[in-house]
Length: 294
Image 1 (spheres, one colour):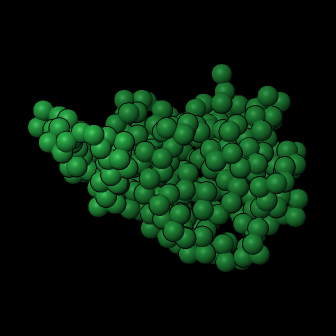
Image 2: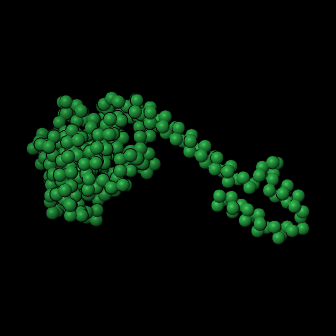
Image 3: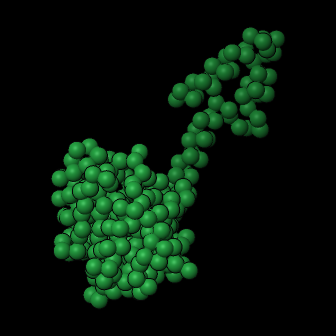
């Protein structure tokens, strides 16, 4: 109604300047053009906006139905190894970013998934709480508690303004790869998915391990590809855009519920914008991996 009132005020404003015109000419030439009533323009726009929203909603609901019905099987993806080490920076990285890969791998009986978390997430002083939440989340995702390595190291603080020491990170990773006989290593790419310095530090350390030949030749290294802003927040729609790629892991509807439940285990972090994240972030529906070795 405000828009409609504005239309009336707009006409009233100009009435004095055209006072020499009679009312019949005014109503015919200014307010009506071939039967179109400018005073009804708000309803005209209102109808088209709602028509657009209706059609968009119909398309999205239809695509979601196709997604839920079609993507029910496990994704093969790039990883062929049997002992997989996933390296993250903070508790909740495992479900916010690597969920589709983890749930697909843990469903395979012949794949043993391990997780290294290089900090306890103590940025706000709640490291102990977040550590317990990580364990609960990993159990939800199918990672055994015995396969989780969680570090509380003063040299690797949870801090977006601190650059982690690359040699410390590299040494921790290389030691565990050899000690646990890992044949696959997965972590962030050089953009860190979210651009977090701690994520990028892990990527740089793994790149150094590869270039310096400090990992066993049998260990294949992969990185989670950082999506551009267009792909990052289109939710399940990314599945339709990348479904034919061979280097992806896709979450089925059941898998996505598992990821969402895992994220809810991080109760101290599960605020409104993270609830939106697990709904609209493409990382909760699809992971694109890249091989780091040539």
